[in-house]
Image (tube, rainbow, N blue to C red):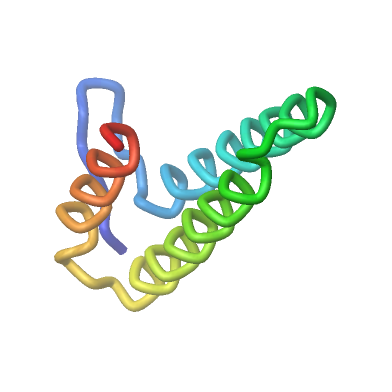
Length: 85
């Protein structure tokens, strides 16, 4: 299993992905509800972006299960681009 070691112990990539997915799902649900409430024209765009993010997280999770060593770098690159755009 791919682990990350820090000064607080070992954190598995599974743990990180699960926390990220849970946080993102809560954030997306809240954001979509707000956009819907205010009849934002961007609602469908956001829903599609959120779906793309969720699908990519599924790919990363499967890669973690396959113990792909390149996963941390790919995940960091994806998240950096996601948050910058």
